[in-house]
Amino acid sequence: MRAVITVIGKDMVGILAKVSAVCAEHNVNVLEVTQSILQDMFAMIMMVEISKCNIPFSELSDQLTHMGDEMNLRIHVMHEDIFNSMHRI
Image (cartoon, rainbow, N blue to C red; front, side, top):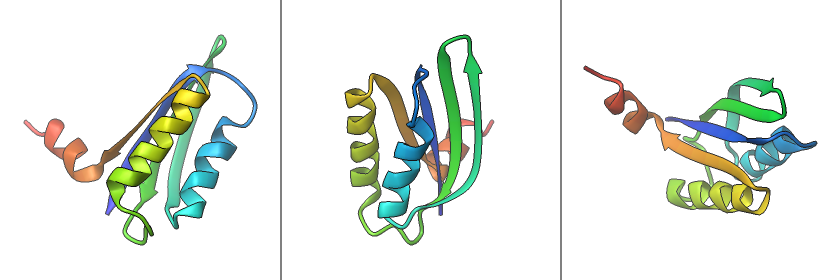
């Protein structure tokens, strides 16, 4: 099972490191990362493998959302099934 993590906000040092650290702490494998800096705005999309995650998906999502709130970032975690359903015609 996979999930998509998106991060948007003002660019600062350590965003990728902090999101990746939460993933590693919970045995979530980062499969792909794409990121851009648009003037002073940071945008990142991560595809992660969550089948070996050691906490419930909702808790992982809540932790990343809370971390984003603390860093003035918008972090959203979407399960691959929901993502696929939303984009199916």
